[in-house]
Image 1 (cartoon, helix red, strand yellow):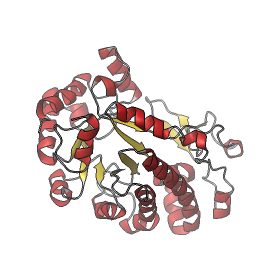
Image 2 (cartoon, helix red, strand yellow):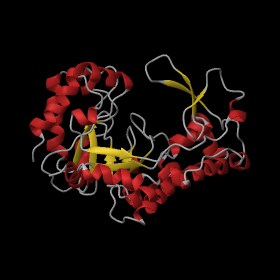
Image 3 (cartoon, one colour):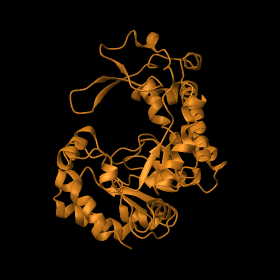
Amino acid sequence: MTPRERVGRAVRRETPDRVPKEAGFTPAALEKFRRATGQEIPAEYFGMETRSVGLRPPAQRPDFDAYLKDMPEGTQVTGEYGTAAVPGDFYHFTHRVFLLGRARTAREVEAYPWPDVTPAHRHAHLEQEVARLHDRGLFVDAFAGHIFETSWQLIGFEKMFEDMICSPALVEAVLDHITEDNCFRARRFAEAGVDMLRVGDDVGMQDRLMMRPDVWRRFLKPRLAREVRAAREVRPDLPVWYHSDGDIRLIIDDLIEAGVTVLNPVQPECMDLNDLRRRYGDRLAFWGTVGTQSVMPFGRPGDVKRTVKEMIELFGPGLVLAPTHVLEPDVPWENVVAFFEAVEEYGVY
């Protein structure tokens, strides 16, 4: 079975030959990998089955100079939407600053220098890139973009929640700009032949949602559904993967209604995994499940292997096994090796 077939069966809750796997690496974890293996690409070294494609950067980024005048010294624009940050002092972490933090009206939002995702030079390569990866037998996905996260990174985290109550038109104007772009990406990815669409936003905390479910349903659910529809108008059977860290149990049924078929990262520290499998195993595939707040940094290699075995037994065959977040600097290299060894040892169906 090819890697593409293996992941395709898993995300459709069918039985592949073995459990597929994935892991992301922070810069510090990637440096550990390089020192230990002498290699550059973890996905190639560990035989991960998935690869991602995306739009190319704009030929010229919008001019945000007018919005940077009052920002702290050292502010760097980190994305084409004007999400900005000041470098931090701990590995890859940064301090966010907000270019739309002083906006008060939807008119000010409309005047913002929004990017243009539609020029052909940004997406004309997609069909060829997908075909190249398919020729290697790989499963290809693509991320349509955040909605909530990009919005609060422009408005400000606390201010966005305040504006949802006090200035909803402003929030909706920002959300709509971003959603429209995500719908374009989703449609183009489907046209290009990707095997799965990735969407998502971190809306969960350790033990609850960041907002009341009715607020999420008003501002985010309809826009998520629009993204999914944009892709499914082209490919009605396209699997849709949704990411949110934390405890999001109160909206899982809503995610399914919006068209989500694959749930990520399924944090064991935040949700009852047995309950998730019992309630949603006939409607969702699961991607993740191995805790990066617990066993990956703090367990021993034997603990990691035991956890991998338990997750396969609980969620397989509708499972793509992965740590529940990128591997941070505190994850011992021996635990990374143990994770992939355990997939090989226990992952055959």
